[in-house]
Amino acid sequence: MPADYLSVLVRLKQRIAAAQSRAALAVSRELIALYWHVGATIARRQTTAGWGNAIVERLAHDLRRAFPDLEGFSPRNIWRMRAFFLAWSAPPSKLPQAVAETRGRQAAKKLPQAVSEIPWGHNIVLLEKLERAEDRLWYAEQTRAQGWSRSVLQAQIAKKAHRRQGKAVTNFGRALPPSQSELARQALKDPYTFDFLTIGREAHERVTERDLLAHVREFLLELGAGFAFIGNQVKLIVGETESFIDLLFYHVRLRCYVVVELKATAFKPEHVGKINFYLSAVDDLLKHEDDQPSIGLLLCRSRNRVQVEYALRDIRKPIGVAQWETQIVESLPDGLKGSLPTVEEIEAELGREEHER
Image (cartoon, rainbow, N blue to C red):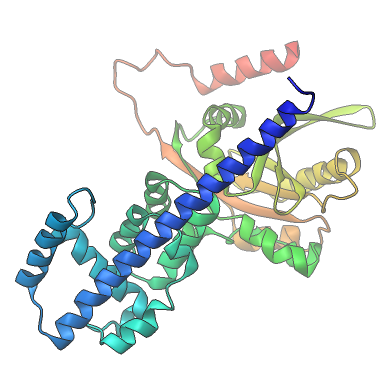
């Protein structure tokens, strides 16, 4: 083989993959545009020609007979097309029962780009699960940016992700430049929902950490777009003394390290001092000169907002504090009691491992 064969092959594969992606996106856009047009046609005919349910049912039948190889023209889906058109042609509080033809042509120009670039199945979920246009648009943009599957989108809606984004208590406004602070604030949420875990209320932090790592895909999904996992119990040596960061990430959009400290207890002001120490060490030992200042995320079982604000008031390093929650095991069947280790046994085992290491 020629010496440059492999490099040529890699470039061609990248070009083909990019072309496939663009082709798939173009097909999706055309399909959404088609469904929008069908919905607009039905809406305006209801206004101008008095179309009723029977005519729409007949339209679905004739379209399926004319295009037997195409799916998506069932009566139910055609009614969804009408709902899709109406949902995006006016604010929800002002939706007409039907829209005139001229208004339909004008409204078609206002379909948000994110909505036109996600699959029809995702748009159906947005229509059926959300009432407010601004909420639907938020999830559409997140779906496009993060590549959410339909099941992931449904899970994010169920967990009310849009209400939690950017809600962590932070000092970013004072600790980061304006160009970075808002982007960093939006990268965090409160609370974090680790509903893929099933642990007791008194679970040790290291047990929770291990469980998170065992479900790292779901963990990263809950953290949000941009987080790249670096490691857990990352060792730092400062003044000949070893310290260990619970979880270390790099955020590709913020271009900075993110130090995550996990607490299985309520927030305490002294937690801020510890994560502030870690941030100083990471900035000195790991941060590249092109990186932005490292950010700290302290995850606690609960927190008092006023107490957190006081604790962060004079801290120079950028730190966010949020709660984390999960499914709670309140009780076990009698047959399992005694067969699982107690909290004390788990802590003793963790202590032995620390000593051996």
